[in-house]
Amino acid sequence: MLKICPLTDTFTNFIRHFDDNLPRCGFYLLMSVVQWLSLTLMATSLIVVAVFFLLASSCYALAAVKNQEYLKSSIQVGDDSVQGQVAEHVVRGVL
Image 1 (cartoon, rainbow, N blue to C red):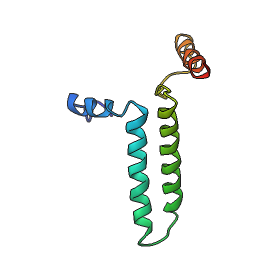
Image 2 (cartoon, rainbow, N blue to C red):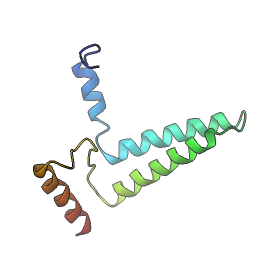
Image 3 (cartoon, helix red, strand yellow):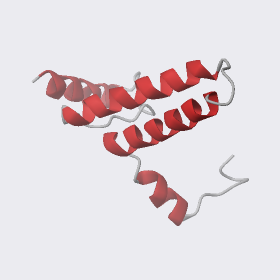
Image 4 (tube, rainbow, N blue to C red):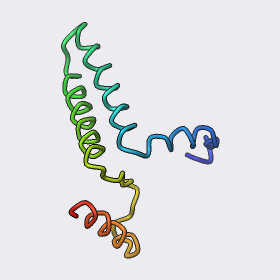
C-alpha cells in the first residue's frame, strides 16, 4: 500500500504527534463526542461505538495521569530482542 500511496514527511510528522497518551486521549474523546452528537438525531447501534471511544479515551487519560509511556502495538512479541523491551516497560510500570 505504501508503494501505491507514498507518505509525505509532513503527514508522517503529523501522525507522530499522536505517539503519546494525551493526544490519543483527545482524539478518542473527540470521536466519542461526535458519535454522541450523532445519537441526538436518532438512537442507533452507534451508541456502542460512542461508549468504546469514551472507554478508550478514559484508558489513555488514566495512562497519562499515571505517566506511563505509550507502547506501540507494532512490536513483534516473538522477537527475542523486543521481548526484553516489552519486559522492561512492564517492570517500569510495576515500579
